[in-house]
Image (cartoon, rainbow, N blue to C red):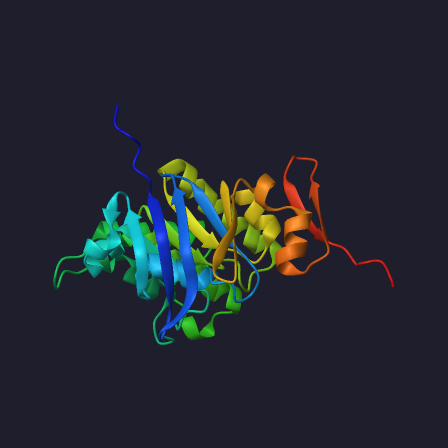
Length: 264
């Protein structure tokens, strides 16, 4: 029997900017169809690690995508394997939402090829799923922060890659739209076998949606595993300097609740 190929395998990965190392010796593995949430306090290296996987910053160590070293893949090949949504993307304001989402189909087009009816159908489906079909003809420059965030996710979903890298995908979204977006991502993961790696500030969302949680602090892995093992009040007090309670909801989900410390 052949061993199952992981969607993503990191071995001793380090990364940074202009000679300054931000992430140190990170090792992790994500099974195909899994969801890994990368969490940690501000400045812990979450976004840098995601960019290293996407090939956007130089990285040491080994990064394998579905069993293939990322360093051996061309940019086009990697774009067919990995979809990356940054936290604060620079959007070309002159484009309509539809034209912007169509850019996600670029890695699948031949040289000088135009979008096919299938490409347009994929974009229409994604816009509908993200409740953006009513904004399809709108200029990106006219969108609210939450609408822009959904447009960015739509472009990445239109790539139809097997691995999604989402940097703070709920930024700018109210709790209802954030839940709807994460439910959509989870449904795609379960139905299509897509693997998700996301950074998330919201620890409750991370605990409820991800199969595995990777906690970074100072650019190093300080805990990894199921949310029930990683997201604990003691660990969050140590690494976030936060006073919280980790509760269990009526549906059995973990909830991270900030609590005021007792008066001194």
